[in-house]
Amino acid sequence: MAKKTVWSDNRFWQRSAAWITGFASILLIWLTFDTIPQIKMGNDADLQNGVTKRVPGPTVINYKITYEMNTKRGHEIPVIGGMNAEGTSAFQEKEKFFGRDDWSQDEAMELLALGKLASQSKNCMNCHTLLGNGAYYAPDLTKAWLDPAWGPEGSMQSMTGKSTKEEAMAEFLQHPSQYPTHARMMPNLGITAAEAKGLVAFLKHMTSIDTNGFPRNFAKIQGAVHGK
Ligand code: HEC
Image (cartoon, rainbow, N blue to C red; front, side, top):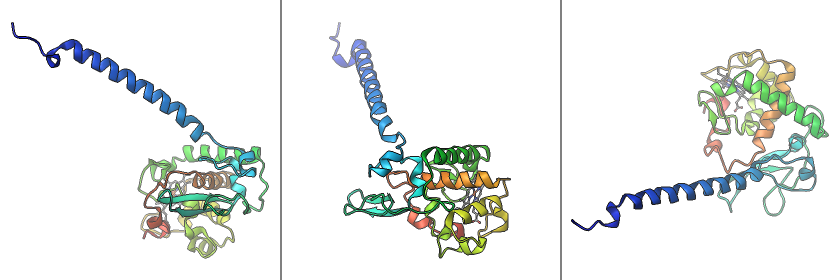
């Protein structure tokens, strides 16, 4: 009888499979526990105390948000409330959101919850992408708040006749077919004024999330409402 090598031994393969499965399970459990605190939403105290969270608290809507190149990380990062010497958030510069920059944590959370529910019931993801989920029929909304089209010099502010970003966006969301800019038009979805306010808060908060530079082509899709 020929001598069996270790490679032809069933027990060797069985044991390897058991060890590899066991090791991978432990690794996945560890990674899960490592990820949970990193993606946990921060709160108002973090923003007050200058603590950077990957997912900032809801009152981030009281702050100015910009998107700056971080050379150390090699991609753009959301910067909340102006930049400090390290090129990260300074949490200093506030920005009025529908006339106020003192939304409390509960009020802001209520707006975000309403916006999230509206985004689900109106199925924005059917056409848009949010944080990597959804479709690419229409512009990626992950950083939509930073689309210059909504800014003071942007086409959407003049077209909607509004003088702030949030009002222009809310107006567009309620009557998108009145403001066609693109070969593809966003249909009217029956969004109420209250839902529009919540959705804009939801979009502003989403923009403040540190997504490791996702979407990669954001710089190229700035002004995506113009279809360039
Ligand atoms: C049936 C497809 C469809 C659905 C559903 C839809 N949209 Fe749109 N949306 C579009 C299209 C197409 C555009 C581009 C419009 C243009 O350029 O005139 C657009 C544009 C936008 C813009 C401007 C994009 C930018 O970069 O500034 C925002 C904001 C937006 N949609 C938000 C929403 C939200 C929030 C929802 C869910 C409540 C939603 N959309 C649901 C098709 C859709």
